Image (tube, rainbow, N blue to C red; front, top):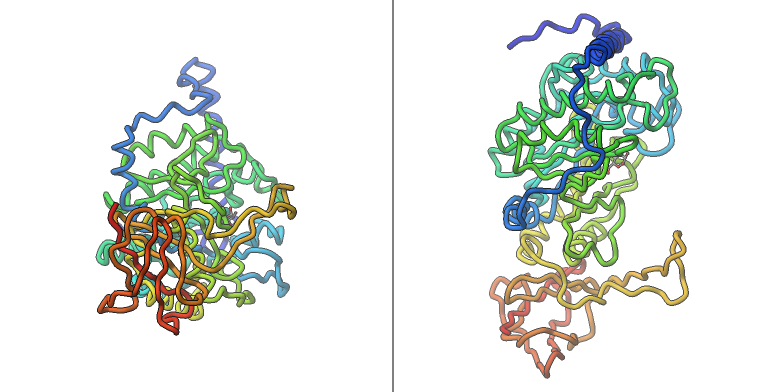
Length: 480
Ligand code: GLC
């Protein structure tokens, strides 16, 4: 259906005039219904206990647990200023430019007119994801700036109505992902929205136009938008709903989302909805918990450079070695790696990001069996140890990371990922079971490596040169 073009495209301040009127109307309606005693019964002040059995949860989480590697995409209208406002760099992460630069709503709302990402090609992005070896993508459907990256009928502040682009990238991505067997998840900033009145309540505002009521914002904008996202993209999409920054979210507020979440019983959600709702996954950000979260599902999200949303002056890309070691380290502790890319306002994933992702994917083509579907280490201390003297910033013993090797496991298999090529023979202690053979995954013939075993002590004779200087995987086949 062709929707009437939002007439205020050249007069952005009208966006929020329209939204304010809607919110005001809603307030009045609410007051009236309260006066006539029609208010629905109050929402619970703590989340209800989960009704799912362990078996049901395991079945629902199965694909995600096996996937191990996902691609985060922070893409929004903040890629237009790309880190600069009025000719000056705005410090910190790119998608926060409106807040960090204290940009008034009326000013920020001029950016969509310049946002025309004609080079966006969903097929190309999904190809990049496939070449990287990721199994799922999570893309920002709406970030804290309140700009919807899809065709929303709830607010005209979206990529279809407010830009010359007039396409729905989420729809295009959903189709491409479906075609290539990659799961697609949506990030949605539920509690912070700097362009819809009431949405900036929880963390502070800088423009009187942001004043409003958070409850009304949630009811009129956030909940209906989440409903759109959960109903308009096919039964399989989104596979994940990634909440963020739950400032101001009480159990009552979080409960507003539950009826729409019930529309997709297979959905996986993270732990950032707030109000006491645990969600499915822990989300350490920009760090790898040294021992993981035993018994929990968790995912480290991390930038590939120093920003989530594109900044033209951030070229601080992590090396392929760091990215690969992070991935292996995370999997060895039972987690997933959600690695972010920040496309430009033209719709392009920067080439240095593509190159690094491709290098990770090339490694996975050889060694993927030690990552996908793999479990955590069967040893425990190879990643390092807590220092008896040094403290971290919270005053707790500091974990001193060792980057020598890591271990991942599958039934009957132990994978040793060697980061530093050791003196041969390489010795392991505490190996469970009997090793029946050892070989390098990089060797297509799986030529047996000479091994010796005495109890849990195993020595492996390695070739003089590392087949892969970043990480070489030795597979030990074992029987109990
Ligand atoms: C933070 C930031 C946000 C980013 C997110 C990713 O919470 O507010 O900009 O999207 O982390 O985890």
